[in-house]
Amino acid sequence: MVFGGIVALGIRSGSIYRVDVPDGRVTVLHERAGAFPDGVVVLDGAVYWTTMGIPARIPGRTGEQSLDYSRRDGGLHVVGLDGGGARDVVPAGSITTGKQLVSDGASTLYWGDREGCRVSRVRVDGTGLTDLVVNGRDSTGRQECVGVAVDPAAGWLYWTQKGPAKGGQGRIFRAGLEIPDGATASDRQDVEVLWEDLPEPIDLEISGGWLYWTDRGAAPSGNTLDRAPIPPPGDQGTAPRILADGFQEAIGLAVDDEAGVVYVSDLGGRISVVALPEGHGRGSQVLADLHEPISGIAGISE
Image (cartoon, rainbow, N blue to C red; front, top):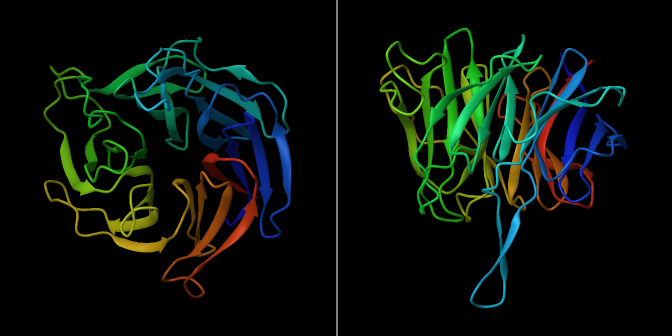
């Protein structure tokens, strides 16, 4: 079904916006989304989202400050599409740094936890909190999990590890949706590296046999919307195709196959519309400028 709107997360204001399609009219759905909202999904008339938590400010040698999100104070929350009934899905502190959030289309939510270096899931009622992937944290940033996508029919979990900023060390992985018998989230042996040496892959989405992702790395291959066919089990991915570039730190994406477009958000505050090669012509245009950094987005099917 064609999207009637887009839900978008404002990082600076902590607001959840609704952006109407196709006129780009913006309304505020919820004003108190918490500290640094990042990942969002719409499921059964409700909006679920993650928060990264409040960072510590670390002074650098040149006087500039960096943000440290390693404190375990991220969250997972829900509010109705009418803006009512906001609550926490899991208790505060259950997540270190909540990043992209997706669902299996039924009753389970999956997300990347960047500083937690893991991918986790929980039922929408808050039960069954489980880590599916746990990496050992180090100083390289290569172990941090950000984007996530699931293919319940095939039984696959996909995720990104973006690597250091503008580092060209990003990777996309795949593993089973269930941890193999006898393994744990930190020692499972069914993990495949599908792509590596990417600029800085962020959010993922599966649609029509393709894997789509945003990349906020350095140009010319970064700050792009990319896609590639999903490889068969045991095979590595083929070189991705850049569908659009020139974003200001591309983050979120929402694929609307029926309309033949992909929506992309960036830290410059824009939500852009990219026509798919099979759609009604190529190119991109700005649907809305929210005038603050935008992280995750999700489509509302109406």
